[in-house]
Amino acid sequence: MKPNETLLVIDMQNDYYPGGAMELVGIEAAHANLLNLITTAHRQGNRVIYVQHIASEDASFFRRGTPGVELYNKLPIREDDPIIPKHYPNSFRETSLQTVLDRSGTKELLICGAMTHMCIDTTVRAGYDLGYDMRLVGDACATRDLEFEGGQLAADVVHRSFLSALEGTFCEVVKTVNVAR
Image (cartoon, rainbow, N blue to C red):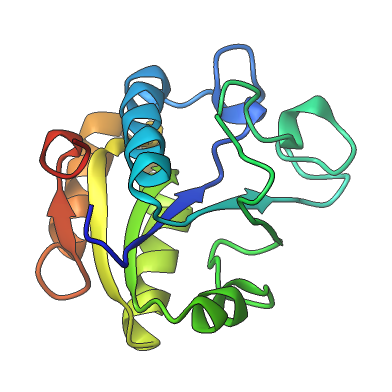
């Protein structure tokens, strides 16, 4: 990790893990890589911020007041790690994230979490528009299969498609092994 880089962990919540309401393909591998990133960030004195999506009571997952909305219990969250609640795919929209980042003076973000095609994509694009320098840890993200026009798109195809669309213009896509030491 870069010295002033903030690790932004997006939506690593119970509903995305095995047994959850919206289990993602590759969530366990992404989680293992995420643990390396968090350990590295804490060891190096970098800030770790968690983003938690809270949906309405009638949503299909991340419903307010359910166990699925909670951050996954195997995340090593420290007492001083901010947890930013959000209600939209964009982690900056109507949240305190930009204020927290501005107060810490950081403009560099290392992003990971879920889902690649939704909250990761939206947050990276919004962060780019706000002037943040971002790196996205592709192997510390997960997504799901999608359907479009009667056809099935495998999660791996969805994941790689979105990473390739973000790479270069909106962020640099990196691997855990290159940033967690």
